[in-house]
Amino acid sequence: MGVVVSNLGSPDAPSEEAVRRYLAEFLWDPRVVQIPRPLWWLILHGIVLRTRPRKSAANYQKIWTPEGSPLTAISRQQVLRLRETLEREHGDRVIAALGMRYGHPSLPSALEELRRQGVGRLLLLPLYPQYSGATTASTLDAVTAAVNCWPARPELRVVEHYFDAPAYIEAVAESIRESRTVNGSGQMLIMSFHGMPERTRRAGDPYFDQCRATAAAIAARLGLRENQWTLTFQSRFGREQWLQPYTLETLRALPASGIREVDVVCPGFSADCLETLEEIALLNRDIFMAAGGIRYQYIPALNDRDAHIRLMADLVRQYAGDWLVAT
Image 1 (tube, rainbow, N blue to C red):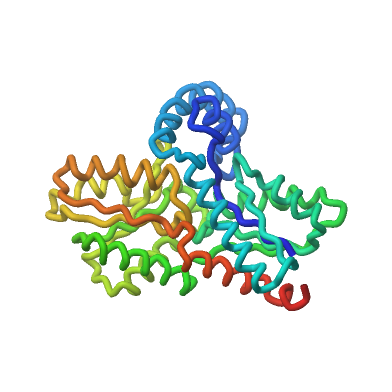
Image 2 (image 1 turned 180 degrees about the horizontal axis):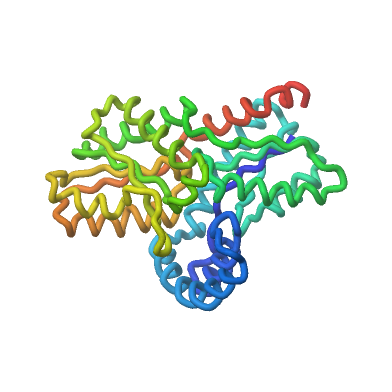
């Protein structure tokens, strides 16, 4: 049995050229940008890939580490620790591999690694707690296309979401408690999720409702009153309306309403990345402080915390079920 752990991915380097390659792959996915292909090709190659890579590369340079992209480095550590956990319980009968949806290590390379080792049953674990067509479904598209080319197609199961899993809610709540014990508590907890175009919600994508459910469950777990937390959406791209309220505008407006001390957590991100480390921890902090804020605390993603690795192992056990007995 094989377990493919997947996340979005990162450029290979914080350079304009590497970012351009990454964005060309990412933004060409029809699950990500739902614009007719001929029109979008002209926009993507005529405008976006000529202007955006330079700015994005500069932002990546702010957070790049000796191990490379934070997202990739953390994801490798997550899979290493998950693999160790599964090996203790099941020996070499269960194999875990990391495959990013875009960039490297790629999903095809992870799947080929498992195919060579004789995997006949495959569990896909996308580290997106909330389901969206642009994330989970896109990952499943890529995996399905790849395994359909195998000489013997493996049985396939998918962890489609875990937005309300008790272990996930408790892991995030625990990280917030720990931060507040060490750093003190702000007047309000901002729970910021990655944004999506509003039209995806109207079309039936459950992402918005699952984000709301997650945020409410975390607030309940922490015993917060309604005026002590709020849900927002970040990383808006383009001119169309996205899910609201927007994180940036919320932070800009809060000091004028008397909320000048905030904690910010991003429960939809399983590992710290550009959107958390540069956008939330740096850019949004500066904007909040410039608007009159006096304290801003970013609470890191779950990353490779013990509780997160236990959650990942629990999800494997839950979804593999009888496979683990039969393996």
